[in-house]
Image (cartoon, rainbow, N blue to C red; front, side, top):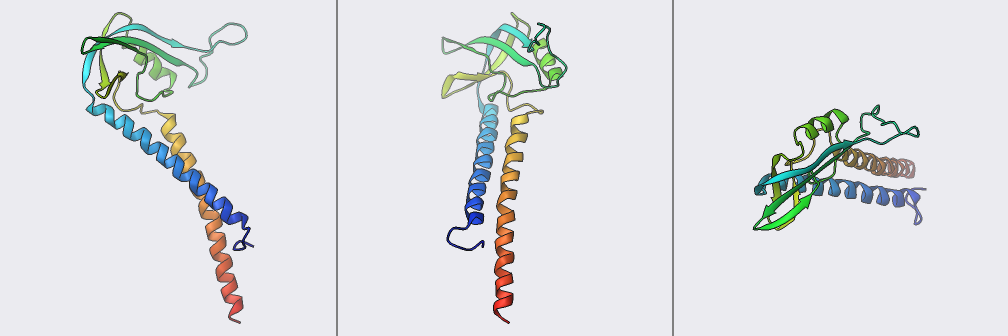
Amino acid sequence: MFLGKKSPALFLTLIFATAAIACFWFQKQYIDKAAQTYKWPKTTGHIVESRVLYPTGFDGQSIREREYSGKMDIQYQYSVSGRKYNSNRYWVFGTLPVNAELDRIVSEHPVGSETTVYYNPSDASESCLAQGTSNSDPMAVAFWTCGAIFLLGVLVPVIAIERERRYRLLFQSR
């Protein structure tokens, strides 16, 4: 029974609806924050560390076979209004680009080189080297996918409830 007082379908619908709304809300926050970086002022910074870290296997050898196995480690220093800051954020949100993109980004930022740093005017300690977000950003895909799955979890019980309502109306009128 879907419409009873202790309806599990309605309860699950509420849970799935809440989860879908949360996924889409987090995605909106994520996109808004990335978009804000296009309005941030810029300054000149210096690369202190620039490398790709790959996990090692039990034999101590680097594991590069998987597309998303590496981690970018670019550290830089910059100054705003005479105050020095250190950061390691390439994008505002930590993303996991594919290894080929990691290698390209690291090669474009050699140790000792100057680079453009974009910083939050409200909090200069928040900065990034690239505005927006990665084209291969799995976080965006994850939020949209989870939201869509939870939304589907809302639609299935709602459709079932509506079918039962129509079924009851049909047989009550006879």
